[in-house]
Amino acid sequence: MKKAAVLGLDGLSWDYLNKLIRHGILTYTKHLISNKNTYAFDLECFPPSTPPSWTSIMTGVNPGKHGIFAFDFIDYATLEHRLFNAMHLEHPRIHEMLSMLKIPSIVINPIPGYPLIPAKSSKIISYTIIVPKTQYYPRNEIMKKYAEKINSALELKHRKTDECKRTLLASVNLVEAVFEIVEDIVNLYEWNLLWINLQIPDIILHKCNFQIFTKVLNIEHRLFKRIDNLARMLNELSDIFVIVSDHGFSTYNRLVRINDILAKKSYVKTTKKPTARALKEYKEIKLEILGKSIKEESYNQYGYVDKEKSIAFYISKWNLGIYVKAIEAIAKIRKILSSTEGIKWVKPREEVYLGPYVKRAPHLIIRPDYEGGFLQSDNKVIGKMYEEGEFKDHHPSGVLIVKTKDLRLKDKIKIPNYTVTPLIMLTLNLPLPKTTDATKELMNIISGEQVKIKFKNYLPKWKIMKSMIKYLRYR
Ligand SMILES: [Zn+2]
Image (cartoon, rainbow, N blue to C red; front, top):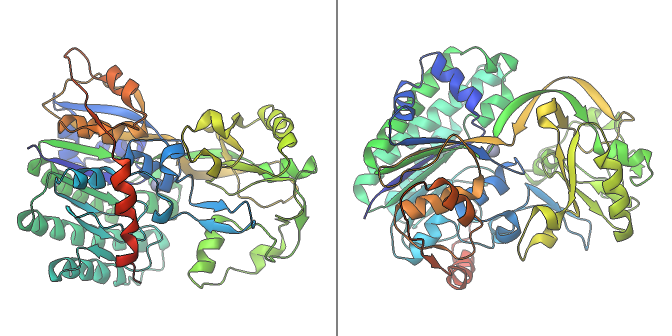
């Protein structure tokens, strides 16, 4: 059977990738992209938020079927603000489907990464995105050694005062650790799928200033030389090699303040104090969970959304949804926001997502006019509907690069993020999940030859697999 390797690069956009190529850094990747068996796509990632997008990429279905809609959600019964984790995952990811077929895989950073879901034929290491401590499976000495290697790379502290350089140096250490683990593990265990997700370049683009979009820093150069070497190793080890990102990253010049707009129409009520009723931003919830305090001074200038008194509110920055308590208000709010400059569209959740878990999503989904330079703001109320300035953040256009000799593909087009896993399974000649949303897209990009697509229902076994979490859960 063939081997597939996937390098997941969080937040990689075509612009940033091209910047690195222009500066002569990703020389191997450049050569790979120009290969006649390599296909490049614009990957459509909505919402352009890390947990739902990676989950769509790894499952082959939209959030309505996999259940992860954002970093965070509001428990509609209690109004409690909570974070999504692997307990909410309702559809198997590619390595879990392969495991059901008894096909071995190695995965570094499945998403959601915690709690770790044991999959018999998988070797798993998980350290990224709300994972309390490096997790590994199976619980043997070899895997423990790898987890310790990651832990020591994570613990290395750099004394640079510049946050950007510190992040870059920490990333260099991590990539070196991952490289050594991959070099070792591929010879120890059987595998047909090797999938690595790195929080790079997302973490760098968030921490560094705007120069990162045009210039190349020395440490950035060092980091991407290593990423390029990792790409080379993965390509040489496999028959099918994929580079994929969960969203792009871009610059914007205006913020549209959705809760301010809703406050003006009296749907949002505010409170001055950060009490339990006050709506926090996702990052503040994360800090609270980690036991860190939030800067008090940044609080006082803002009005918080009062979750109890408000009729409707926009949940958080990358949630992109509005929770509406009074169902009759949905149509009115949709009308108000649809005619607001900076918002491309507002749709009921049922028009954006499809599947048994759609009701977990906020009632209305918003798509800001990213192309017009608009970005959604945080969830506070400050008395202004717009803010002007220089902003940088996620963008719904990601990267997909596929090298395969087995299929001829129609490329240079836009395809949705849930197409990635079914495409890989098809090139490996495996049955696709019956639930996949990508059949139409696959038929569209497979040009010329006849490919017979087989399907399988992976859901019954998934429920048993997920129930195994409790035997492995630890901190
Ligand atoms: Zn991301």
